[in-house]
Image 1 (cartoon, rainbow, N blue to C red):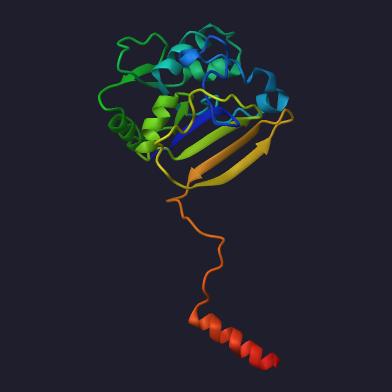
Image 2: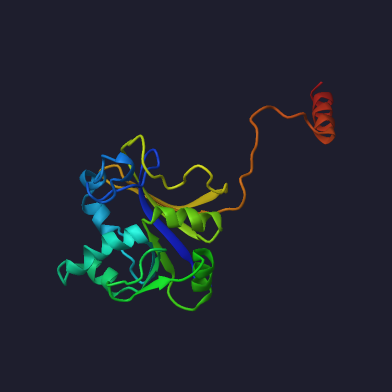
Length: 222
C-alpha cells in the first residue's frame, strides 16, 4: 500500500487560497493572492520536500492542475522543479475536464474516493497532493491521507479557503518533523494519530488505592 501525502502552504489562520499570485484564485473576492511570495528565501528553496513531487506521482484537483498546466511546461528545461513536475505521472480529479494537455496526465474517473483508494492499493511511488484544497477536504473525510506537509507562513489573511474547513473529520495528528526558515515559515510534517482524546485539567477524585497510599504515608510521617 503506497502512501498519500498532502502538501500545502497556509497562513497562520489556516488559509491556503492563492499563495502564488494575484490571479491564481480570486474566487469569493479573495484579494491577497501571492501572499507567500515575500517569505521565500534560500532555506525554503533548499527544502522543497513535499512541494516538488520528487519521486512521487501527483494527485491534483482541477484548479491546481490548470494552474500547473499553464505554468510548468513553459519553464526553463534546467529548472529542477519544472523538470520533476513535468516528468511526474499526474492523476487529475475533475468532473468537467475531458482532455488533459500536460504530459503524463490522466483523469480519475468515477467516484474520486474509490479512484484514489484504488491508486493507493497499486504498486509504485507514493502519491502526492499539492494544493487542491477541495480534494484534500474529500480525501481527509475518507481517512485516505497518510501524511501532511504543512508550511505555515507568518501572515493572517482573515478569510479564504482553508486547509480544514468547518465539518472536517476530527482526528489527532502527530508531529514527526519541523523546521523554521529565516523568514518565519514553519515547515512541519504530521501523520494521523487516531481519534481526538479529550482530557481535563480539573483535579480528579483520587482512587481508593491512592487514598490508602496517602494515608499510609501520613502514618509513616506522623
